[in-house]
Length: 517
Image 1 (cartoon, one colour):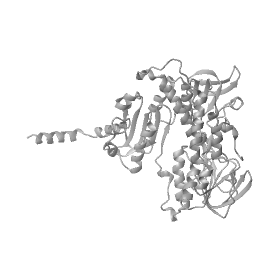
Image 2: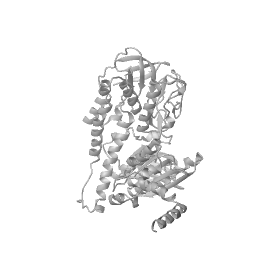
Image 3: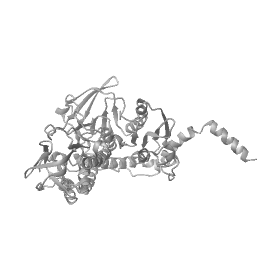
Image 4: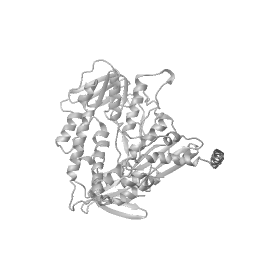
């Protein structure tokens, strides 16, 4: 099986065998090319899959090339497995605080980490049917298993298990994604480490875990492993966690992680790794104090590096930099026949961002418009995102500092969950909704929500911003009671109340006095 890294699909149990049978089937016979393709897609992660299947559904002749596992990071080593593990960790955490809800759990109740990971693998294998080679062939896509390398402006070679194929194309899309970035930490390579690409192969819980990087991946998995009982040390060079998020939001999550047993070593400097003492020793300076902690495993979560190597970009005249392939707002590369989408070219490393970018590639590559009129643009995307800690942190649009940098006057309103009935009843009061509204209008510039289901709640603000609807629309929308979604209405009502001026009130007082005559 060409290009398949077996180390990322351990253990070799029935669930991983089912996964591989779907997304990198043994004995797969690549098609024989029959003429020029309308679209050749390199990489079968989210961006590549969406590009290929939508193009094929429109009647285009499409080829899809994948050297490893179809489904990409999201299915295999990202969204799907991480959320399976996080859900199990939350179930265990809920059990431990059951007494708060009047529930008496017998002493000695235990969890089985091996069973947790087996459940994850089982569900991942089930979901993998949606991304399978067989399904995409049935949908009209020519699926090639093997490594793709551009030969020139309009040709690519596929190196497969049964020989090479050369495909020619009218248009192509490079959707090769990204991989875990690894810091140049002294001693890290020698000691060995995990990334999101290998951590889900674990079958035993590390009793001591060092996590480098307190972004989304680091925070989500640090909390999950701590809840299962690992002694987790979370190291971040910035002050606090989630350095790119609203600071109030990040602080709420940080406090919860501390309660879950995570040791936070922020403002970490001079990090190095040594071996010995029964494990891997992490030495770091934090807030002026040197710490030396011994762990069994190290998880690296410091960002992503685009997969631009060994795919022939130079031969095709496609420019790229450290941060990925260079594209214009239409996602066209420096070769006008070749587009790119997803993590390989985007600052938004999200599955839903890759999906949205694929739609833009389809419109611009297959339905070109003269003089640039009618093109879809990545600049028009309104991009929400969520970090799936407990509580979750979700955001869309601008932060207050972003608006000010653009010269926009902004009004910011915050409503806490401890004033929302459903959050109180759920015992989930630690959070808030915060909205940024352009002064003098009701235009929503951005919003942040901290709540156990913030990723679900942020959608209302995303839809409003996409539709050009403002705070008045949300304030005038009926929200079912009791739900935590009421916080969205309550926070914009703060804006409405703030704009109920004394002058308006005086006019109404006179009106009501006249009506009593």
